[in-house]
Image 1 (tube, rainbow, N blue to C red):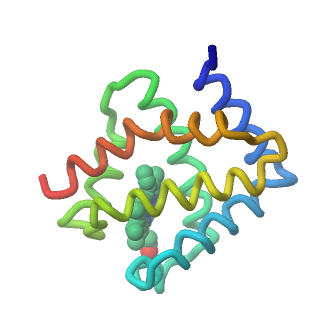
Image 2: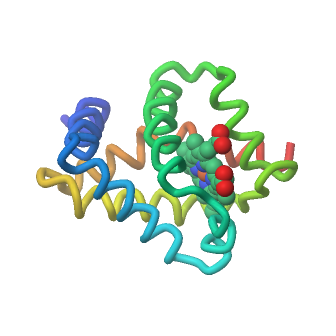
Image 3: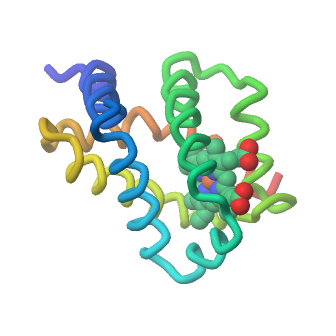
Amino acid sequence: MVDYQVEFEASLSRVLDPVRSEMFFMQFYERFIGSDPRIAKMFEETDMGHQMGMLRESLSELREFSTSLKSNNYIVTLARIHGVRGRNVRPEFYDAWLDALVDTVQEVDPDSGLQTELSWRLVLAPGIAFMKFYHDK
Ligand code: HEM
């Protein structure tokens, strides 16, 4: 049996280790932004240093959401920021986001394997579903 919550926690702390975290976020954004010119355009004006800190916080919020399945101000606001009245992130771009993230984990986490990749996909799925759902609401 695989405990995906435990697998995810272990991998998250390896990539957020001070020796790897900067590389992790830089490689993620490079990959994500490089995956589609429409995505690159959305980040043209963004302060990426600030954005990396925000992403770090949002990963722990999405993890929290997946265990509680209780909405809170953070996730509701994040969904609004990405929704039609905000940045208008097309729901299909979330696949590019998650693919870029798990590919980066495979590269940066020295102990990652198939189950690690699946743990990231499973743990982040509820938060992503929440954000996609509220895209046009
Ligand atoms: C579950 C997946 C995602 C998470 C956790 C996430 C997280 C965040 C966070 C924490 C912020 C900062 C919000 C703030 O200013 O308070 C942000 C901003 C932003 N996100 Fe996302 N994001 C996700 C998916 C995406 C996708 C798929 C796209 C587009 C392709 C995207 C585009 C943006 C843009 C354009 C901003 C604004 C950047 C700026 O301030 O210039 N995000 N995101």
